[in-house]
Length: 222
Image 1 (tube, one colour):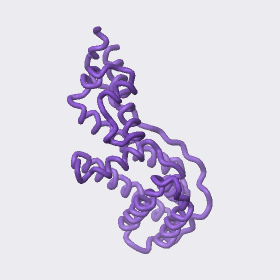
Image 2: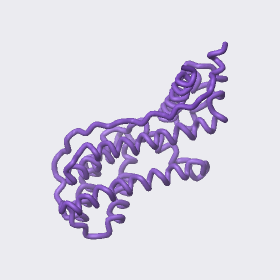
Image 3: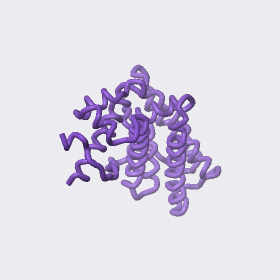
Image 4: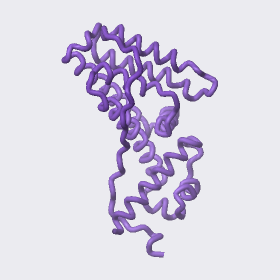
């Protein structure tokens, strides 16, 4: 029972930290802010992690993992390779910015000053490219795609287009999403010799759960 409560407390703290980063940025997250959001004492926040920096790093890593898993779930929600690719591109240039994507932006923006996030951002890029590579490889095997350049290059370019265009999400006055989406779809059509017109069906998504750890919360003994 104690282990389950400890695991839940850690998840609550990670979620609170992630939401604060999403709302206020990395500069706006603090022990006090996390404690207030999670409705615990400041001592409880620091008890569950070796340091506050470790909590922030874990929250960023969790948001990146959720972002990756959500994208994978979108792709896996479609069996047809054309539908799968189309849905993945649509998800990569979304209509609104999600909380996990905001955290990704925050971590990306401070990589130069805070290299502790460098590996996580590199892993994010690697897995995004791997996702597109897998989708394309399956489509090639099924005869749906006829690549006109190396598959890894196509996958990397799709991710690069997403990363460049997604900056519009930070500007409430930028309404170019349909243009950016159309440009990306057209690149995929040209690079893969396929047609991607039309809206993809809705796919379900799932978020990962944090792994439990054994410990005793000091608040439980008060």
